[in-house]
Image (cartoon, rainbow, N blue to C red; front, side):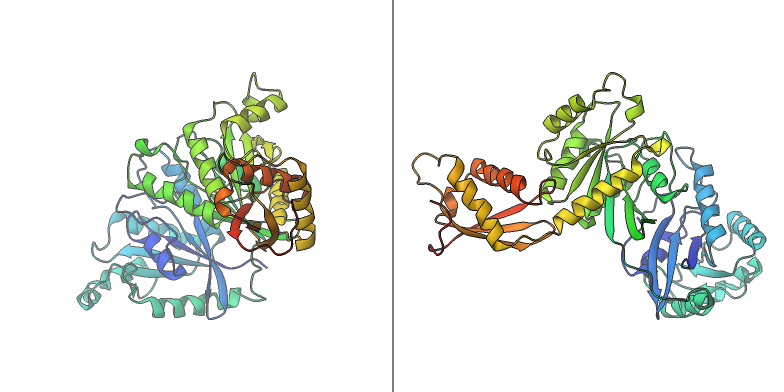
Length: 445
């Protein structure tokens, strides 16, 4: 059965995102003084005293969004409340009630869901005497908390467990099989891709660039496996980052790449490959992450209908990812979206593969007896005594050589190409390590 959902709602800037971070025990939602930072539903799996539930942060009810997305934000709030087993209604205890708080309360009463009123920003005991007016909201005695300073956390957790335990039966949810980050510049279709995977309007889709501001984790199932897709904020050139929100989004995109098992670098087929595309590709290479180059909006790519020509163009313009598979999608029509996940799963399997030392050294021996690059002038040849795989994700191979300083980038690329040809790592990054050691078992001349 699905996990119970606990939704955090309230007007803008009352501390909903800080509350989610407090209950989750780590920084997930962006916290910023700017009202309306959160637009999508930010969802995280939580566990308290063996009770598992999905905790959902929502946008501010009644927000006047600068990009005119207020209706879409409120639709996301309605989705969360409709699915919730418990509502955490957050108000600002320092400001007291205002008309928007009353509007939220009126709406929640019509929803007929259990509600806990949380008087946030109670940073001193004196504030408790000012909470009596919150009783008039009609949801009983409010709980005083400070999400920023973690005050009232223990009592709140106990109350949540008490109210949702009847909805939380059965075994703990399975860990995701794979985390997939979808990254790219702004307005390339990442959110449409996520919605196609989830089979619902999980995140806001808009023609407005920069609609997604945070990293949004979306759990979905496919062929009996649970996956997490991470929708990220669209990245723009660092020199054009306009405010703190875009700055946070840029770094959350980098964090999403680091914590992903596979990265989907989404390219807009209707435009030329940009500096941002190349920068993101470079960061993926730097982090040794398996990657699928997802060319989206392929249905609109007039004049680029020859797939092979576009593949050649893409490999030339995104350095370092010439081994990555390319997929052509139209996310708005759910065209080829599911197949991309199959490709990602294949890459993840490659990245976790181990090969025996004997097989590896047979490949090394063949490579060194073929036509290795000539050494740089003034130095002798590189001699590889033996190699062994020391790690996975990424596959990491240590070579014991006569002199590590003789290894050139050309020689390293030569080895990478030979290994990809003969070992099951043809589409994933590998890390090669070169260590000096006295000769032991010689496998190359």
